[in-house]
Length: 326
Image (tube, rainbow, N blue to C red; front, side, top):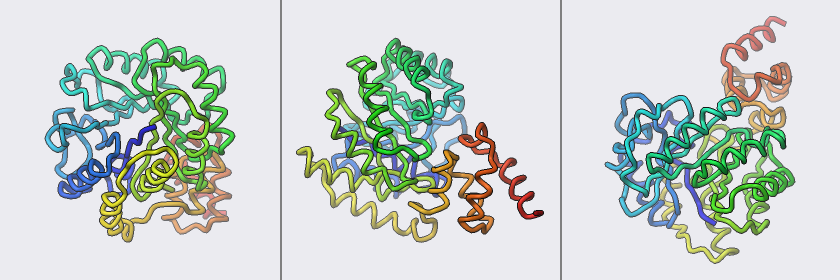
């Protein structure tokens, strides 16, 4: 069991990834001192890098700021960073995560295969994994088995999975996935279940490497993510791990200044979005418009099912306009 900390990537949604150079270095150094197994430093994007932001336009950009003796990841949202931008892998300590939607599956598999051919260890992140039907999931697993990425991560994008969902999903995948491929879990805390769902997964005693995503202080979009400080202490106490907690507390002390200005974490609007299997940005927009929780629930129920999981700004603006006219 290992931890992949996503604070600099998932937490970046809170502040437009503008952590600042000094804070980035401090977060990385403290995560290393805490013994966190993998550190995700941000996104790869086809845009000019900005100093102090956790966006990178090449693997080489990351090599300027990381400690070379640790394991790092960078995420690509499929379609935002062409394969032509990669050179042959020169540093096996840096892994690439590829996040893709269900409709992008075929092209994303080819992209991952091309990255592997360049020598990269790749983490495959099928978003909204729990929304795949069993047949769709088994088909995806067959394709994953063909290309053999380093990790297949189950992603609870909307944060609406319960313990039984986690157990059933991991049991199905573990029973069909090539034994050499590790399994990951990325959760969101919309129903305050990230920690308990992760405990349920760990209790399954799956006989392969398990990589758990987390963020310090739960920092992440909407309701945030599994807290790194919670899961590391749990693993120390129950699975003989030896993560160091004080360096994580140093990060938290610093992040609290951000939290005071732009809070994240559980709230009823994000709970409402989750129970309706809806993208959290819909709830975030309605909060900024000053709607009550009851009003948010009524508006979100009007969003067509096929529009819920991908955020559509124009759609929600039109729904808000219609509501106010009424």
